[in-house]
Image 1 (cartoon, rainbow, N blue to C red):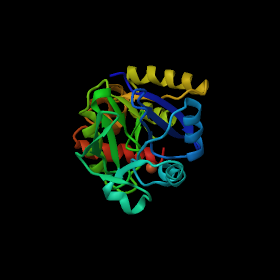
Image 2: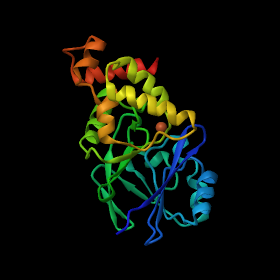
Image 3: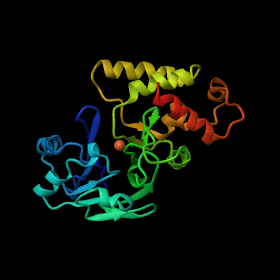
Image 4: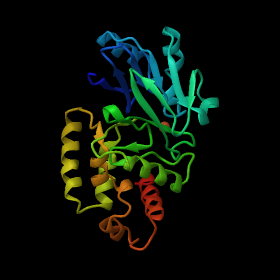
Length: 256
Ligand SMILES: [Fe+2]
């Protein structure tokens, strides 16, 4: 079995479009549908035909392209059962722990409430791939629009349990501003300082900073490092719980 091919491209302002393609079966999935025209353009360029859509959550910048894409061909459109009422066109609804097949691979659904109440991530263990939507970003995490800090902390903790080498694709290119915040709360982290340089370098060339990996995030993303003594000291929260530290980080980032 050859590996799945992946195309990542920017959509709208700072969204990512991601296409997943199996050369053997021809099956092709789009992760979310930020912009039908951009996705169709990319499909045409590669000569791929869209067969699946994996939808992470109901926000317009992730679902607006669904009707146009669904009109063009018959698609399997898989999204969170908990948000089915807010996402038009789903043909299959899924929840935590559900699995389905894509191009012969098992896709695992991980429920990650916090950004939205029903947000799901899609994990393909055979490929070491995670599609994290707006739950986990490089050096950051999604804003808490519909969930509590505890919800999001639990969601990120679940993602942290995946193998370190798991490649993570995210919904947005927010890395540079996330990095500025990360350095402000974790100033002595050498891996983070080095990453900041790499990020600035990539962005100055107009290149994406994604995908990342779970291991990389665990070493440098403050929202996954709530137990770190240096971060806790920086916040003056040495004895607080992990959820309290997470909530304080999220609160500060919201107004950073
Ligand atoms: Fe979102």
